[in-house]
Length: 225
Image (cartoon, rainbow, N blue to C red; front, top):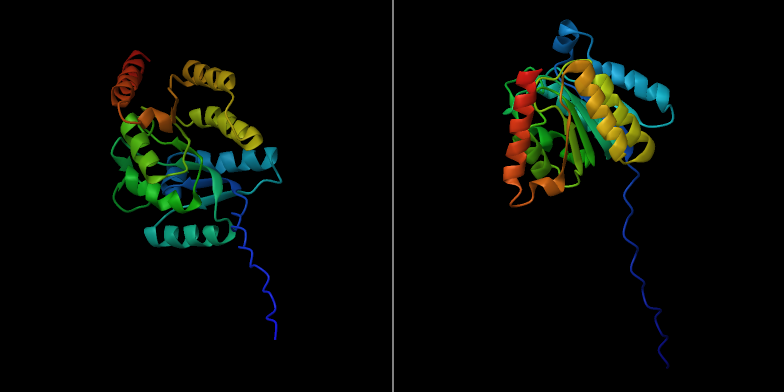
């Protein structure tokens, strides 16, 4: 009896990742921020939803670590990826007050949001734009391409300048170089603040001196303001 030929089994195509949601806003210690001043994260969420009503924009307002864990898990269940993340809070060069718990080191901050695989990270937090925080965040976030933050004190009004960058990223998925320069100049003229853009290639081996020079330049501009 002649054996029937079996058809070759074709391998299944690799599973495609679900499309990324657009913007996750994490407002750290939201009650304290609201007591200090109306939190800029809430305002940016409002503006972003007006400008882009069809995009997925999510705001998480943190209080305790337990609640943050639950909120991140609930958000991840609905949106496993976010293209951009904005973090609003109090910080210094060593870390961020993510919740009411003690200061969270920058590498740990990156680990909290690593599950969302962001490509762009914006921070309205003091000193977050220095080279040390940026390097720790790039280490923790493997898909991260760019970080936007102030290397010294961050003033609330700078959040509206940062929204120009957020708007561009939501609209075009990349930052126009000329628009970025215009935003940085406007930021300095209107608020006396400094806004840095860091990219991953700036933290490759041998680039450490350049990062320190930018830190020094930011420090000098702060003293002159």
